[in-house]
Length: 413
Image 1 (cartoon, rainbow, N blue to C red):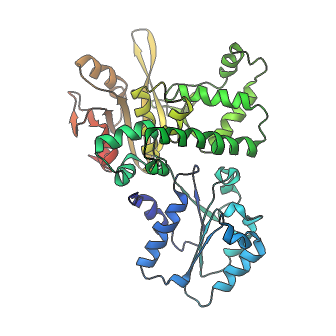
Image 2 (image 1 turned 90 degrees about the horizontal axis):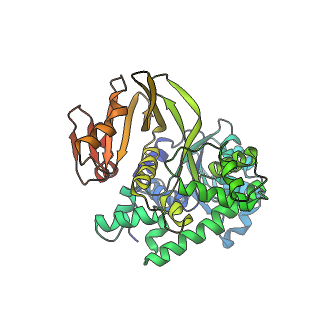
Image 3 (image 1 turned 30 degrees about the vertical axis):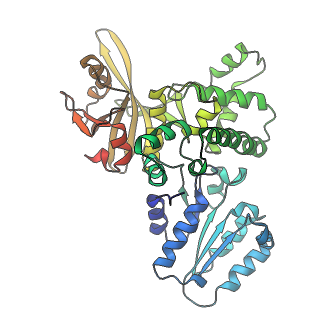
């Protein structure tokens, strides 16, 4: 497999270098956290003048390193490895394997010339709870599965072949090692069942595995659709689950969110400048996992496009909401939807997603919500067509999907 380009994450590590905080690399399992730490970041340090004996790298999931799972042994080893006043870089992979690792890491913070980086990927470390363990002493770097640009950088084939593989099997890095479609399908199905689902059940002591299983299937079948947790129990009851409560559904949704399997997108009233509590949208952190979950059926291009675009926006550091725009038509009030409202510092973009704009009527339909937003932030429609960009008669920017995904500055055009 070719080397995967993950420059955006490398930059995040470089920007946090020696900031007196523990760099905590989080994300769904198999998303490339360990690879980011070593070889990518380790090679950066070596290439920029750091002596190899000032890099303390320990893989805590290897049997050969079993002795380091004793927290006292690990603590002493790291401290005894520091032999001068120069900065030492401590890279600890799979830190959750060490009992009481929180106290070990907090102790390292008191060593002035020790810069600490950790990854972890079991049911505890997957959770967002890990950040609260450090309460201001940790700095999170969230790693997502490969974007299409990253996937293409290591794909052995044409851009079109890469795209066809990506929309079907997603961007978990090890997909690139699977030679056949059958191997890719089996890898994803096995990974979901034996890793993600198992971890979620064990961490949260879930006793209604049948309900969790059905909930995941429901979310997989409705990506990009508005989902109201209060109404989900009715769906379950109609399918012979007679004792499922809203509390159970809400709890299980939170378990899936904490494990980074799915992402929740809030609705935002653009004109009223306020959030709407329900319903919300849910997307999968990797489209391949979603497709595997429903046995690669229901391959609706528009919903898959939405999911991929949403993940791309997250990877670029945007906060993303679903927009709601209220309009009045005569005596009737209607709510129009904007697929994504994207915020980053003082920047904001409104984005609609469409398979095509092949007729004037279709263009008018997709533009309608955007044209009813009375501010000067950029309005954009992303279409599947293989184009660079053009503007509608009303001045809305239209960008082709691959141009959007492969050009990191596409929103700033």
